[in-house]
Length: 248
Length: 148
Picture (cartoon, each protein chain N blue to C red):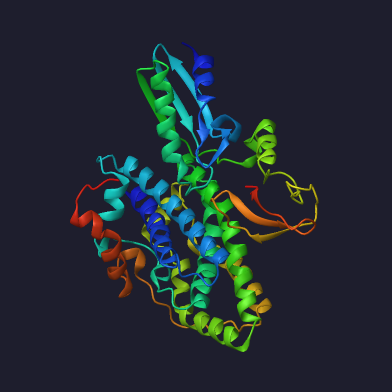
């Protein structure tokens, strides 16, 4: 069951972040960026699908990937709180993305050598995509931070606002420990030094200030969410709940 | 019917987003194994979110069914992860011929005037696998197949 839970938490991160990014479609600040955000959303959705599909195999109960994605309640979602935070303005979306991308770079790198070869393959593919994502988000962070007074102020505000969701990225729980022991998973705490390097050098280049460490909010991995997830699920699941089994 | 005849059938299946390339050119087709009129095929997605993979799977099934196979299984494999290194040289030549700069060339050459003076507009283009470029010499915008 732990492998199932482990796959689901990472699938949930990607599904929820994908949904948030897809909210930008047709509202991007410029055409190329609109396409980029849709592309990145699609990458995250693809990773989520691969993980849900594999999770349903591991579970062996005959649940389809859509059942897992669309028919669980808020408490059953175990995504990181950072991924469900609202898009805010473009700066907030890019800061959120850079913080997650820097984390996923370490995650996918570690999981690509998992003893579970299917998870390893999914991670190896996701790692290649995460490199494009982080290059994109970190370049934007620099452009915004080192841009106009207005863009600098907004990027700093977003960084300060989202900083409290950072510690959760590196928390380990019983599932992580069990998966590390089995050689399947990786210890999130070990991601911190590389994440710090990536984010600190980006923030420095962007002429932004690294926020002081503040008490973090967590609970996502246990299914305790911020007020936003319920609203996301209402929109995401409306179709499947209204027309059960609908296909197109 | 043997592996080679099934492969020949699948050599006709094209990537729906870049129909000049077959799934074999792309390196999406990972294995084919025939037993009587049963056939098992393994395909791998290019990008995690590649929306073409469902259609490719369907086309693989249709092509094999039309060729007389009665039991067809199509599995998606994720390990090892797809890389543009698996694209055939023939595939790369076909891409260049339709104006898409193939992967593996740094800097990407303009498909119109072959200039190396090209720059990236966006790393995320019209499909998951392509970036938007423009040629500084002739001004032509073009797609580049991203190295991955």
